[in-house]
Amino acid sequence: MKALFKISYYLRSNYKNKSGKCPIMIRISLNGNMCNVGSSGLSCKPEMWNAKFNRMTGKTAEALNLNNRLDGITNSLNKLFFKLQDDEFLTTEKIKSLYLHGNQSMMTFIELFEKFNSDFSLLVNKTKSPATLEKYERTKKYFVLFLRNKYNRNDISLNDINFTILNDFELYLKADLQCSHNTTAKYLKYVKTIIIHAQKKGLIHHDPFLNYSISMKKVDRGYLTSEEINRLLDKKISIQRLEIVKDIFIFSCFTGLSYIDVYNLSHDNILETNGQKWIVINRQKTNVQSNVLLLDIPLQIIEKYKGKTKNNKLLPVLSNQKMNSYLKEIADICQINKNLTYHLARHTFATTITLEKGVPIETVSKMLGHTNIKTTQTYARITKQKIEKDMADLSFKLNEFQFK
Image (cartoon, rainbow, N blue to C red; front, side, top):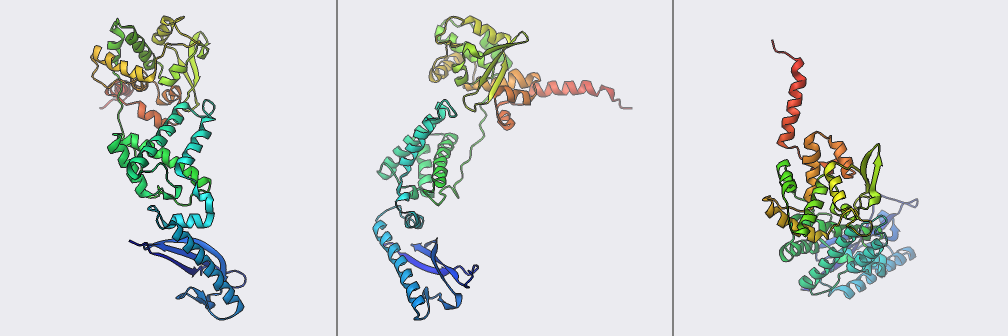
């Protein structure tokens, strides 16, 4: 089916210059989809404009010159359309962008993504984390796979990114790659970051995410109860690799540190103040300082592995993948019927070790290294035991009141 492309002009009647002229604006239409291109750079008095024919009336030199220049704009837009008419992703926004910005708008999405990641990598371990770079790289990889599988191509123009492309990518992530809803939403957020980057650089002038909703479903990651923590502490495991993982997991249950922060811990992070030892680190994810008092159990774990690590590391931490794999075995051995992952330790610290024992959530937030207390609220749950304790304390304090 042949595409129907139209060009028209209209006066911006709500604005007049000192000569009483209104700017002449350009409008294009492709198969009924209209787009305002912007000003033509020309102007005309309203009484001299023929809206039906999109021309200035009269035979004066001014009218002939203005109409010739409008014809030149029309010819330029028509040539651009004929050049692009076989493009299956052709839109009025793409025609507009190429008309206004020429080759500057020809940068492709994957080219920009690669440039963004390359620039990002220069800041890794300075202001950016390696884990975040890896997520951007994986998003780019999946987008390339999506283009190959869905459209049989390796790249796409920035101007071709639209609602349909985003929706197809979401379906590909969920159906072909079996990504969960929240994982899919995270990949789309990384794509959105690239689009915003392109907009800031003036490479595109439309927002494909304008009517596209990205939402995260609330997920309860869970935590270990006091009884389950004691089950881990009491269980003697003869397999060395599992014993190491169990000890390091318990260490995080009592310090609230994430995997990457425990992995990076060195003896230099242990500071002593007023006879008490503290872990003082800048969290890798947020670069926010976290200060955690070393309780007896984590101190015993540090002492257990003293002299058994390399490169001044505090603990012999394995890869995150191995840690999570071995934790599944440990859960079976200890009869813990939960999806035991390393990150669960952080939730356990926030809920069972601190908040349930009466530590204020503001203090918990500081120890976790959060920048926003709302983030802490997703980690720390108000348990039944916490409610019972708080109400018992309240009941005691209310003894001063007597009903008579």
